[in-house]
Image (cartoon, rainbow, N blue to C red; front, side, top):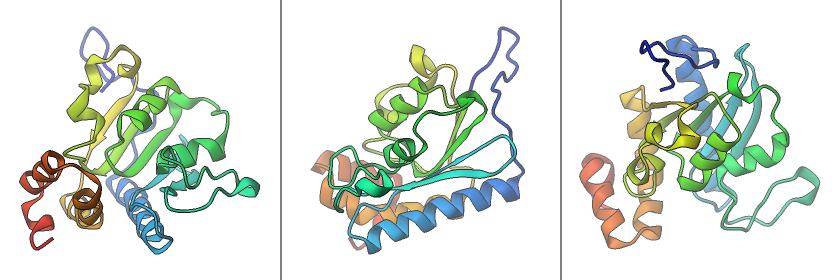
Length: 193
């Protein structure tokens, strides 16, 4: 969270109502399910402006061909949901007032890109026990990330839904150590996989 010397929140991004936050995160989970249907990893992301309008949607496209007409970076290691979103949005206007919502805690690349782009706030539905930025770098300790407010998993039911969606991918893609971390963090959601 971005705070001043008195400990006050200094983020310029709008804090939305609980109902709005839930709806935004549900949209990221819908996009994650769409990614599964298209053969990609289950992650979705949206960007919301200060007025509460969704200004862009992205989803993981690592298993899909590049779509030059729509500016989607498909079939590349960097075709993560957040990167798909940023490629579509191109240059961000007043990024410090924007909120990024994502179904899964951003990885180092996506978290770093968000901070370097000066996105005001990041909210995610599900922690990434292995590859999430927060496990690898303390969000509030990295100089580039200190101006970005981070808000992990505000809704337990959506966190669980996101974990269930991503758990098969975590088991398939992560090394044994990463999968163990997922099993420890999400025992119910990984049970039986």
